Amino acid sequence: MTEPTPAKVVICDDDPHRAAAWKSQIQNIPGIRAFDYDVIDGERLATEIKILSRRRDAARDTATDSGEYSVFDDADIAVLDYDLTPDKSMYDEFTDRDSSFEDLQRQLRGRTGELVAYLARSYSTVGYLVVVNQQAQDLSFDLTMQRFATSKADLNVTWESLVSPALWTGRTADGGLNAWSWPCLEQTPELWRRRLAAASLDAKVLDALGIDPIKERLAARQIDVLTDAPHVMSPDLADITFRDVVDSSLGLNPKDIQNDEKYRLRIAVSVVGRWLDHWIMPGQNVLIDEPHIAALFPSAHPTAAEEVDWKSAVAPDARIASPIADLTASVAGFHQRSVWPLSEVRTLARKQPLPPDPQYDLAFCEDVSAFRQVDECTEVETDVAGPFVQRFVRKLDGVRYYPLTRLYS
Image (cartoon, rainbow, N blue to C red; front, side, top):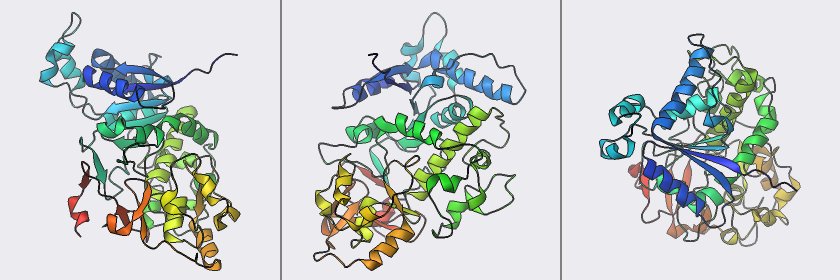
């Protein structure tokens, strides 16, 4: 029997040593699945950006599409350093017989991972996109939980998070940073394929996500960002299709064109996935996941919360004897984890007695994905949509929390 081909991870950086180091550190994460890796730097990186740019120009009818292959076309996960301008300190690394450092610096000057993520999403068949070190380079946690909501990448992290077991496997041996907002990165190739399979350009977005806009109260900004395409004349989110969101502010830039239906669907799926991951799920005000049910509605999900590994594949066992086992989770195609409509959870919670020993002394910490004693946590005000803006963090040593004022307000 033929072994399945490993998923492909492409790592792009102007610094070849750093890119190679990231590859090595990721490969050596304990328990990580096997991937094929490709490191793109120097002249090859500049060439890849040119290929994507020519595809954009061809779509605008300002150039002829050469039909060149791009490494992004078969990348399941693409990792992009944010600052792609070569630094003078790397002069010796880039000087060769074919091009000078100055030539390469000129080609890459001003290029960013965010730009390349946008081009790759719009003009290639890339899978999941990760931008590294945008706005921060040290190990950090965003207390607003919204800083990268408008990014064209699927995920933004710093380099230390990129090479951590917590990001790739959901597991951390030292109790360190393990943000609940992070996906299990090694599983994102399958997540991306599930999302593609669950969508079609003329399908309604909310139907695909299992959201009833009559029962669930979306915040205005959650609606605005998905209905701001110039051709959308109705603010009724229930009518928005995948085709509509291609031209939203989360999709194509205003002057750019993509007429190929295959690419338009991939753009739409990315837009809806990012809207779900960065605009809907952080608020827990429309769909709500297990640890937040346990924290906010303990009668609906009484459990020994502190003992559950919420990111583990076996975490759903915690709900077997729980009232939420009687509720149907929202359709799984787009969701990283099991989620339920908030309205149904509220109704269920009202019908259930409080557990005999409700764990009011525990709080769910967004930075470690675990429940801890309240007196060991710090409560912060986030910028998420909806009523549940107050959250808790463990406030780990060695992690920078920003904006710093949120820790003391």
